[in-house]
Image (cartoon, rainbow over all chains, first blue to last red; front, top):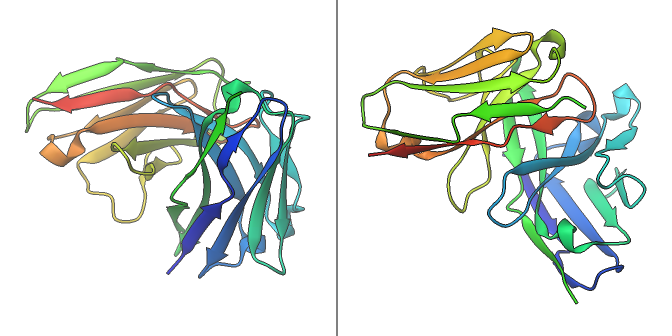
Amino acid sequence: EVQLVESGGGLVKPGGSLRLSCTASGLTLSTTYMTWIRQAPGKGLEWVGRVKSKIDGGTADSAAAVKGRFTISRDDSKNTLYLQMDSLKTEDTAVYYCNTWVEVAGVPADYWGQGTPVTVSS
Amino acid sequence: EIVLTQSPGTLSLSPGERATLSCRASQSVSSSYLAWYQQKPGQSPRLLIYDASSRATGIPDRFTGSGSGTDFTLTISSLEPEDSAVYYCQQYGSSPLTFGGGTKVEIK
């Protein structure tokens, strides 16, 4: 069974940094696209960014709102996805989810972490 | 960036009624790479529909997706009490991927 477990959230001051982790079991992360999605309190879903599968180049891209401040990476030896968040702003306050689709017989099933809350406040 | 606009903002219907949710894109969605998600309070979202009209694993057939280009629809044919949730569309045809603002479905 696929499980994604996030960690690393917490309270940080504006301008600070935080690194989120998403560790997978039952799935080899390098074989799939891994995505970070966030949800501000009482708001909708916002795509943060993704890293492509190794076979598709393993490159990362991100939303304009976080470009240049957030970095998405993957450590294949630890089967873990990371979101390095620098120069944090109050508007980055949200629950952060990691997410992937896994195809079985051509039909995708989506998997989500439990979400890790990030609060940016002085 | 493709902007997705969902309507209505809230839908309040009785069990057994039909729900029709709209998602309009600011430009054509490549290859109909549009998904629908359901999110219940306190839970992670769940994929319902991918490629605009294909049901994901384990999704009941009362959920139907349709549309292409810039106009997409999620139809719930006969509402069940457990369908009370917020529904989001997402395009994954071009980067950055984007979500619509969501439609809340309330069951009377």
